[in-house]
Length: 239
Image (cartoon, rainbow, N blue to C red; front, side, top):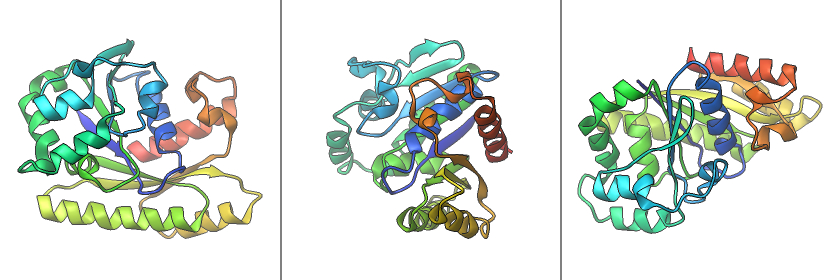
């Protein structure tokens, strides 16, 4: 079982859209558990509105128990919730709060491995306690950047943060960079790609397309060129 977290400490880069499309891509051949750690719960809302706390990250972190929602073949969800911000405040008083999620994974390891090939975690655009819990247990962290200087700087900050967590908690999360919302006719997009090509973590880019933000996954859309590009980027990320 491989754990993948999508994070960057900047809003609007397309983090949730990437997590959604990666899960839908992987479920074609693999069993996927999608987890929504973002207080906006935007990823969860792409599949519906779930109010039972037993199916959310709230119950996972506070009680160590959760019932994943079965969404479709090969895809389950541990839902986000609009009280995640209050959850984070409560967790800040807990001992060993950075490894609560890691302990839950360890306690449920056999069941999770039997049921899933991938865990995909969408985080908030922050370095807060839930994000730390996700990054510490991850095999792979995907940083997403749109065509702006702030977004590029946020990727470099993520690289530093992951490196510090790897050292502090004696873990080995790998890092991959993906550029998003790229328009090759615009200087900002070309400049971002030029910068990213200097980094070994860079895996590719996704174009600026309205379809990428739709509730219908790209893998099911009619644009074959977009499907090919998405597939190529995800294969690079996962290699």
